[in-house]
Length: 161
Image (cartoon, rainbow, N blue to C red; front, side, top):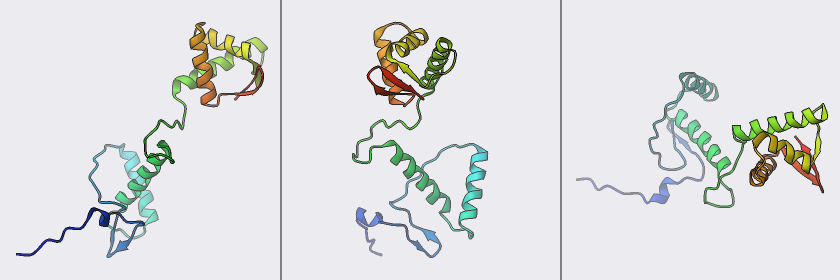
């Protein structure tokens, strides 16, 4: 009977990809992840991979999908911390809609879309769009500032993006 040599877990972790005998080694021991994507996206992905790697090798698709997922995860987690924190790349649709409506309210008042507005005017526009409650107005001021739809310049002046 043959003896089976078990490799320690650290032996699966490679610092960089290595190609040997037509097989591509991944960064860590691979696991199966079954996902459903649109057929058109699958065709486009396979077409791009075949253009990048002229000769077919087993694992090309896995490597590219792994790189894409690594990139996506790195965008969504704090680089200084191993804990996952909510990092917002694009604002939610609701915030974008409120920002557009606030701009429209300010445009009604001025007759054109202003690039700057006073705090009271901005608060009044938000109150007309979302409600008069001071907590609601504060919340939307914070959200609009967080997603860079507005920017505090000086004193009572806000820039509207």
